Image (tube, rainbow, N blue to C red):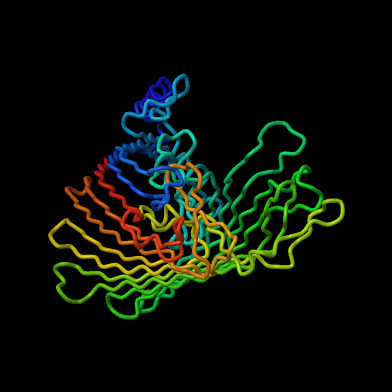
Length: 479
């Protein structure tokens, strides 16, 4: 609690200081988001982790200060507290419910060196395209270790990274270069601290300038995990790398219709650990996404919008072919290529059940939605999502269900030869009480498909008690 008070006083003191000549203006803003969360059967009724149920209230508070120092220099700092109501923390330890974390802390330098260049340095938020490949929020399924919101990590607002961004604006062409430190791991004086995880990328976007408002993007991202390059990993170990080139296009062929297509490939080296042996395999995966949104030209007072989203992420073609151990227990690369898609830093489908339970890999995902405004300031939406495996699981393979509270995974059985993961129905409604106050509700049901089997070999989806459900009711105030 003392930490919270000191940080609050420090921010107030910063804001209250007399403005120096070099400070043009200071803006204070923030938000308070209160949520009631109810979840049931997120282990799909298998009771691998007991009767999985959550019923709790959450408050997420953000306080932000923006200062313009000159026309070309500005700074941003923001603090965040995420807490579960009544969470008293662990006795004799820091109370996680009163922990205040640094959410944003970055400097923006415009026209640096020359006019087209903007440089952003520090802890910041960013995303590219539809966040299919890279988003500062990562895979939106985990909260920081000192946050009490680990019990519902997929709802955290701590979605920033420490990064450099170099933005070149040559309108209609824009180029952005990214360098982000994902995990520094060892920072102490040691024999070998070459164990960081880094993210690098280049994203180029071009506005064609035609009547259809066409935009195209080309990008290349690289995640480099050096943990396995230390001496302890062995002479033949390599860094775990994911190289992702990709293309994305968006166009409006007719009035009210937007069509987007994105294709990406993954190459690099995959390092898997089996006991003390580290296996090196070549990556060769593919991902694709199609998005079509149409504002239907009927009943226009209700603003009806239909949308279809198809997402494809490849699975592993030959999971039984792993690297082997050579003479002297030296690792040898597998002759097989690892073809399962790595989720990397995607940030899509937040708030849905399937996004919480499953990694974005080895799947075909079809999502159809319809949205209308039945009355002024109220928006309603219904979404149906179907998920199927890209590559069927084989007998003896394991399958896992992730959990929103970070309690690990719930291993489950499955039916060999089946590819139906399941179906989800989501109902959402939002009410804009004022331009700064919004209320919302999300109700979801996930029905497990034929892939899953109970102890007797029966299909889970045939029984209502195996359906995962959630209700998220929230109110948000911005100031």
